[in-house]
Length: 374
Image (cartoon, rainbow, N blue to C red; front, side):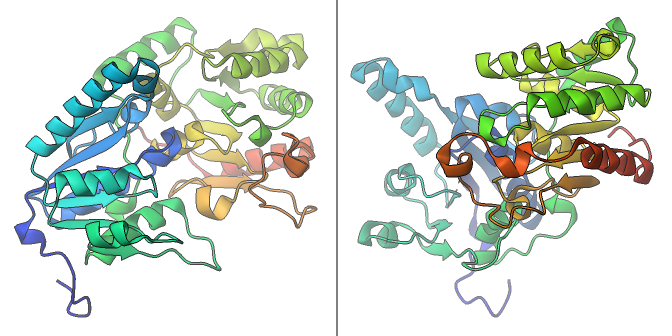
């Protein structure tokens, strides 16, 4: 235990810990090193996770996680009686685990009720701008984020551990995502059916749940034409969301007929675990700031990422060979706004030149040998 941290948590006294991350898919995946680092520091601890139901695949099969508990956002749409019953079942399951340590990795207000109802001996969360008396009473440790300089989301999550006396080493700071045997087998069969082999294709994922993070249709299509002309097979992936389907359809309609004939479109056809298995087999990933970009990093796939209004310092590909393309003509970025003026279109992103992006892609491939499958 570090002598300089007088209120460090005595890990030898911890039997079970609960780590919560009630955010989106990419956010949850970026917490995976927290479980690895905590387990490495205290092997005897059983570590559980609490996430939204749809994000659970991001942590499924993580070797450091004992149980994953989930909250279904649909509970509140099922009527008050069913919602209360579902919440009660969740809290009963959590209380039965008798947690000694709670690590709440967001400012979500549910953290306060968890700290109160579960009553762990130690509870750590992020310092809040306006921290009320209840938060100060229920949490024993608060970690801080830099105010003037950006910090990658992975490091920000790990700061919760640093605050209680754990210094993560490099191996435990890597992202962890395990697709599972069923997903691996399905993807192998799917690739074989399309005449594709591992490392023999480039994965393009042009969409995002936030459309202001997406490149323009015509420029994305032009890049795919360039990649195909270089002799690469392309697999396009996307979420089943109607807007992403529409975006991909527009891009495929804009590419040349020769390119289109060689593209395998798997938009909406894969589960998250299957998407991870596919990405692990790609020669490279091309996309924007979105959860599949973080999946590519987790799977060790060389990643070309286009960033607009979001910050690459906080959200860039983590610990993987990558090339991040940003505009140098827009000093206003990263602004964090949903498109210029809130208009859902980000000029700093849509004006990125195809020549520049293609050059970065070519350079990335030249600098990285075909990755060895983990």
